[in-house]
Amino acid sequence: AQSVTQLGSHVSVSEGALVLLRCNYSSSVPPYLFWYVQYPNQGLQLLLKYTSAATLVKGINGFEAEFKKSETSFHLTKPSAHMSDAAEYFCAVSGSGYNKLIFGAGTRLAVHP
Amino acid sequence: DAGVIQSPRHEVTEMGQEVTLRCKPISGHDYLFWYRQTMMRGLELLIYFNNNVPIDDSGMPEDRFSAKMPNASFSTLKIQPSEPRDSAVYFCASTRPGEAEAFFGQGTRLTVV
Image 1: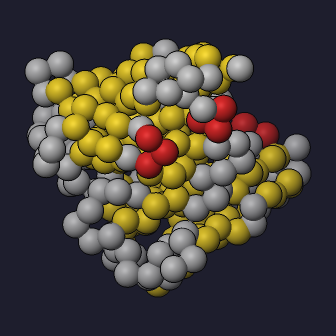
Image 2 (image 1 turned 180 degrees about the vertical axis):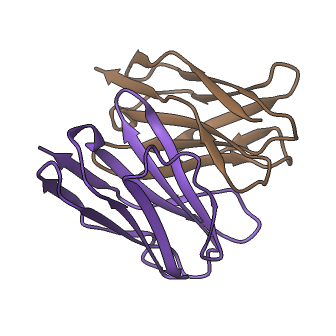
Image 3 (image 1 turned 30 degrees about the vertical axis):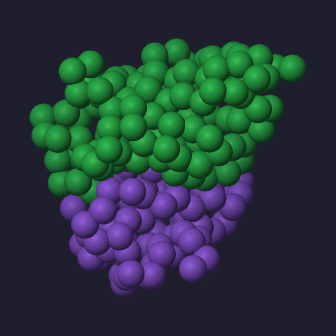
């Protein structure tokens, strides 16, 4: 079975500060891992994905995530937050058939001036 | 490609009425997923199809919910009769063959009064 835990339902940072959103996963098979972003009143958009290649994955809008098997983590980071990064972020792991995504509860990121 | 298309974007209906949500997946995608998003429960997978065949409907909350996929380019999610607790945003998503990256529609915001 697969599951995802996102630590912190709300994260608030200052503009220009480091963004760190935490995700830990559980998987009985080698996982595929994803980060999605959801802006208000919109669907989910893929930020980045890990599919067993390089452990440091770069995504859109300056975000990146590192797969750490020993820690079962896939934390999302961005060196410098921008006001436009304010959104909800979801971590997801693929299911046993590598087609069903299991989502975490989401982390709402607020960026203040 | 236009992406995953859902209709309507917003639906307001009275308790007891039948509601039908529609989804057109991306052409060539062979998996289709229906998710429900609420503040209390986050993103829940309701049902998914592979090549138009329902694979897992264990997430469907009650018999009032049903889903069909009569062909590769169309799916419906029906609620009959609707109840206020069904109020949520319903998302449809699709994936390419052999891949877990899901492409989401804009969602349908359902309000049952």
